[in-house]
Length: 109
View 1: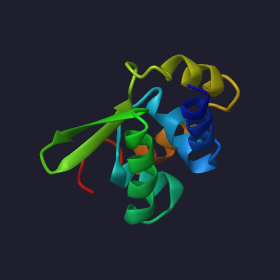
View 2: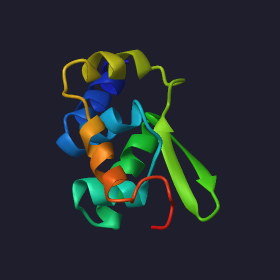
View 3: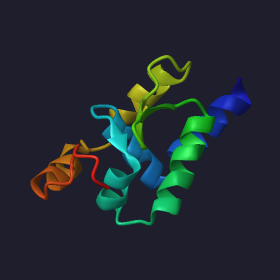
């Protein structure tokens, strides 16, 4: 259990992944939205999401050709994630920015 918890904390120790978790705590997101928010390449975003998915911190569901990510509230580490999120600023402004650009939720990535 100690090793598993240490691995989860290592994952959350990355600023991008921690911010992703913060975004997912209130919103579902697709890769293209993360690409816009973080101004990173799609492969880089996918790599971060794969690590979070492998740790069972996020879920994915297919919606047509897109994959939508959400926070996994069934994870045994969900309470830990929620506790960690108390110590970071809200990520809502990042979602608001892409909504204002018309890039949120249309899945026209």
